[in-house]
Length: 449
Image (cartoon, rainbow, N blue to C red; front, side, top):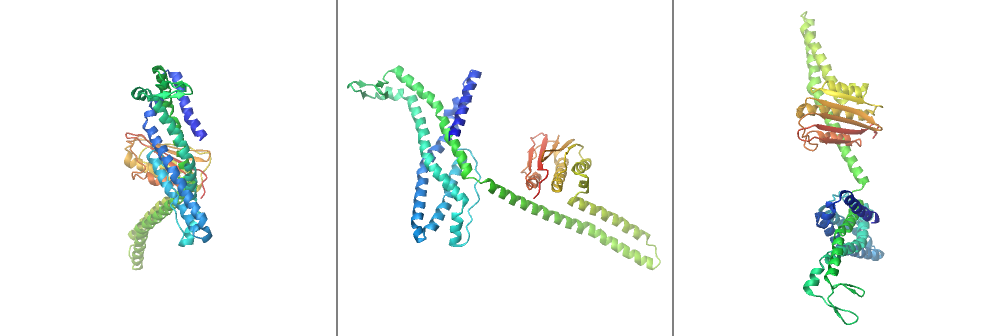
């Protein structure tokens, strides 16, 4: 909490420093009391103040009854249910964080119970995300009402002090001092009564100063809750990593299946058919030779068919593992660039050779990007840059085309991103309308599964 408040008031101090440098009040400070996010934060803090007692009552009743009934074994399933039920508070607070704090927190993995009552008890009592929700509810139930009361009371009192001359003038409040004298005063400090216009205006000025300060404690409490929600109610890094690996595994399996289908189709429809034609031609040539005929034409046809079958086999092999990669990634990409219908300016700076798997991913990714540029970009020039910095291989493909490439719009970039993520890499796309389009792929040079 201290660090959060310090960060918020550091912003305030920095803003005041800006006042000294520029000679004008920063817009941020002037707008803070009426800024929409301030009011959303205040609404969140207010709701948290009321939800706090609900959460502590839930934990007290649930765990109290569960521990009390453990002597008759009924309490153990109840304890498991309380832990799992705490996830409901997680849903509520994630929704509030998304709607009011404008913080999108990814939900944790769903609760999966083992079969049977004993399975549910075991799953519930070992539900890590359920226990994280319990910790959040406990912390929020203790801190929420206290901090919420303090910061909201300060804001409300600041607003009241700022407008205090109005009710003082309209309603003429009267206080009687220790000597029995009536005082036209709405506030007093010890024996000092604020009962004149100069005093009330000074008091109101203090209130206005506090009004501009009040949003920052509210934002500090809201910022603290953002961190708590993300830390205790969101998906953990481990769960995200597992989900990413599952997605990567699915992508690899689908790519492998697609490659096998493509190879089977190419062999069946192309090479196999040519080999059958060659065998038939050689069979007819053999028959002609047996009868003393001229089989030169048939042998020539079989020879041409054999060369065509070899060419198709090389294409199939290149789709599985490009032979050019035997010379290294740099040479392979330079060869690929030379075949592009759009002129490519290729720059290669590789201090070490990446692992074979990374080379294959880089090669096929660049091949698809060059194809996409040729088909969709209406570009007249492509710049291809490949370099490694430490353990990261960076590939940048830039063109001077029309732009508008969308990584989630079915342009093929989604597949490239998934392929990069299978090895803990990533793909970034910058493609404004009118161009240029810049695609950057970062891959680990020595990734191993």
